[in-house]
Length: 185
Image 1 (cartoon, rainbow, N blue to C red):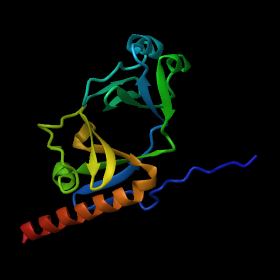
Image 2 (image 1 turned 90 degrees about the vertical axis):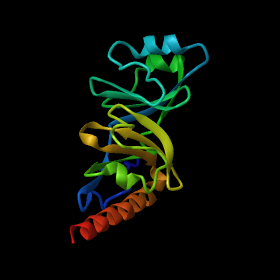
Image 3 (image 1 turned 30 degrees about the vertical axis):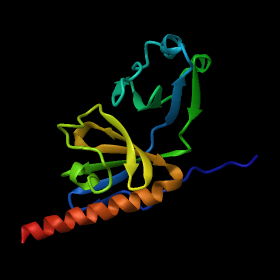
Image 4 (image 1 turned 30 degrees about the horizontal axis):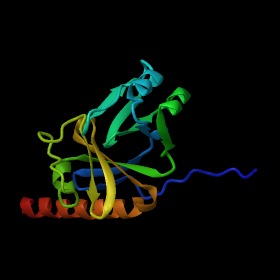
């Protein structure tokens, strides 16, 4: 049997430009959950008391190393150390996303200003605080944006577009660094 070796789509990360840091993060398990019609309560019961619960639109819930991230109408992304319980399969469509999504984290000074060049969402902490999630486009790439501790933003993009997403973010980081250098003169 052939043994496959997991490789990062972004071997050149982490990347620090000016006051910003772009790095790849890799949750152990990523699953898209979408409850079947009239099965929302059954899904909550199947997920059990160890799960964070079902997130409201635009929100993230966390508990015990598991995050439930709103990712669209009637769907959430399970991100954590383990896969969702098997019992949830009877109440929801469950699709493994660990191999299909790449997770980037942008941290540092004025993350919102950097991403404002690419994303039509107000990501300033006052409007998009910790525990917030939004579906948007990063340039032309579909993305799920999540505010994380420390003022950073986690960005979930299709693995096939990870290189382009990192390139676009790096260009915005260079522009931010250039503006800071000009302001310091």
